[in-house]
Amino acid sequence: MKNLMVSLVVFSSLFHLACEKDRNNKNISACALSMKHKFEKELVCTEKGTMESNLYEGIYNNQKVYFVDIMCPSCNTAALQFGYTCDDKKVMFEEFSKVKDVKQVYNSCTKEFME
Image 1 (cartoon, rainbow, N blue to C red):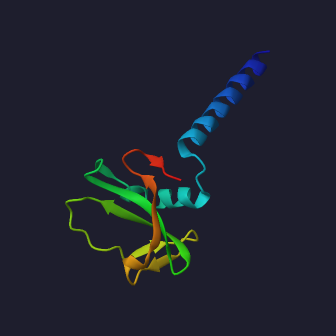
Image 2: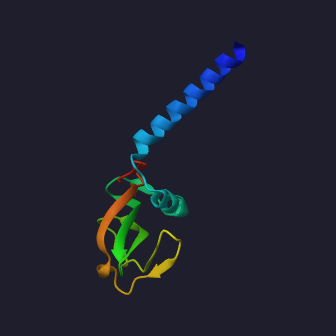
């Protein structure tokens, strides 16, 4: 009986954690999770709306690329030079303006995925 109670508590805890993860991460792709971990040290938030570095994805030369961009209205930042594919291949941007369909994937201030 004791083993049954312990098993029930463990199962209940794991089920709760899985539900909590699903609620917070919605339907996050494995690639987005991987890129979030890859750029973990760069995804920082000093102050929401003032200085934050977030994870984005876009399409460049017909391939999906992930990159970190700084959201800072008063900063003079240089255009991004590279991103990574889901296969962890580094892609150099000739012109960042050619990256299309850019959308935020992860917000460093709210600690939430946007997908």
